[in-house]
Length: 452
Image (cartoon, rainbow, N blue to C red; front, side, top):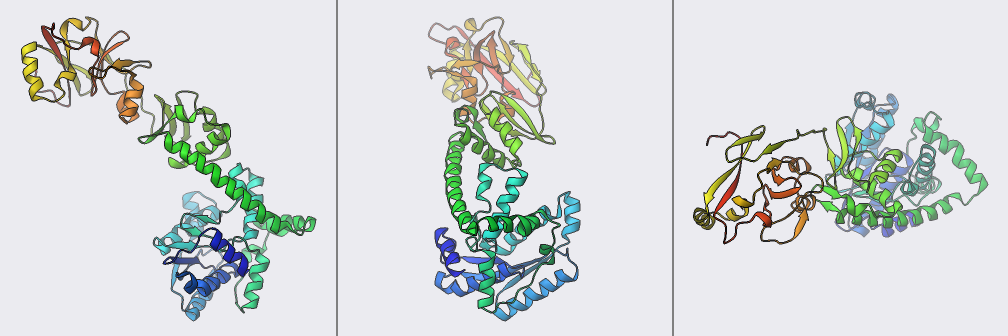
């Protein structure tokens, strides 16, 4: 076992000097061997080792026995121990999860608490990895699931990942290490146990090199998985736009990369990544605007080319109000007007107020049918002093405006011609020049309107 563990530690850089490592100590052969081994190399690697035991209270007196065993073991070895005791059955019922799933989530949460920012070491081994691979295949998995249990994930390390259960038990025997056996592992009640007791032994009979071959497979699958995930992460980062992602940059990706990008995108927003869900998001990327219901009152949506989560569907009322030289309520609490002033007065104001000139238009150039309205698909503007025509969608994206805010901004338009956009300014076609006699100042107020 020693060679396999050292190989894993070196390959995955698990123990940088100065680290503090908390071992998840159940009292079984795997965790006892792991704690013993890490203590034996702690000085060599310059790390501090302690332990954490979590009593799930699922097996009555046996759970109490495990806790007592761990307390005695760590006391004899001089290891600092952090103990937790929880009623996992009640917790699972309250969370409406299976006991296995709930206990796993709580186990890692409590280990994180015990580690307090340090490393967490778990006793997963090559047999566990093989069982997980077959379990994933049986219930359905993507290619990324073929790498099974990763050797290292964030601050979680698994130094025994290249060692078989037989090697670990041999290490315990060689070093006179006592350990306890979880009786629940001996039954066929759980799917993983049936794989352990029946499927893997049959495969081992077919080929006695099963575990060595699986180790090679996991090494290749892990490397390729990391490579593809790196490409997907880079693609997602390059498409990032504020709190969202630009669909146009994800649409051209090869299907294999797009699928992995969909997985990362769902993770980013806290959605689960089932096979069907990933396939649906993969299909939708690049199809235009969409809204996909994933959970109650939670959606993944693409609007104006930006992919974002939506907590609750929001239908903002449509508005289109003729522009006038008096205050009008455009929608609840938002007022707008045109205010006509002479050119000389405008020039005085321009010297006082920065960007004042961006929100005044030549009165004679504003069409009589001009209206205040929302942005429409296809709208564009050639902003004064910029000289470049841009779609409003791109203009808003560059400004990193939230999707919800975009529908609230006022647009002054005449038919399909956009004359002014709130917060950005006027189109050069209506900009005042040396022949302008009077201008219309475009004013917007939000909240109470005092000035009538």
